[in-house]
Length: 95
Image (cartoon, rainbow, N blue to C red; front, side):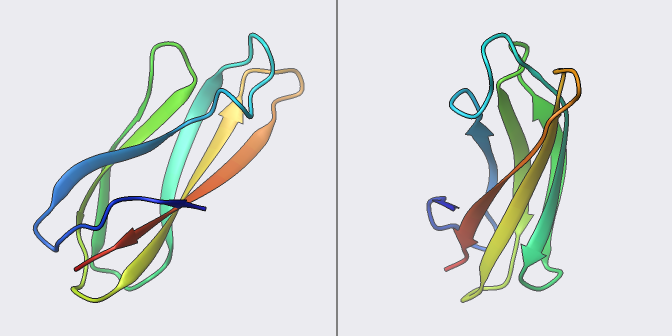
């Protein structure tokens, strides 16, 4: 699990993953979804994005409860045949 830098409840920051080490040669991400899988409902996710080259995903994260830790999961589907589905998790601590 990737540990992102600590944030505050008022932080508005883009976080994400580079998937190049998990993708096969020429494979690209075609869909990306994000969800909070551990923590309360005070963390807000918006502006999901996939880079033009199809190997990097990102999300805008805001809010959170001071003193809480959140696990955020990114689920992607690739353009391979058959499509592959992969997950990565990031940890964000709110200070």
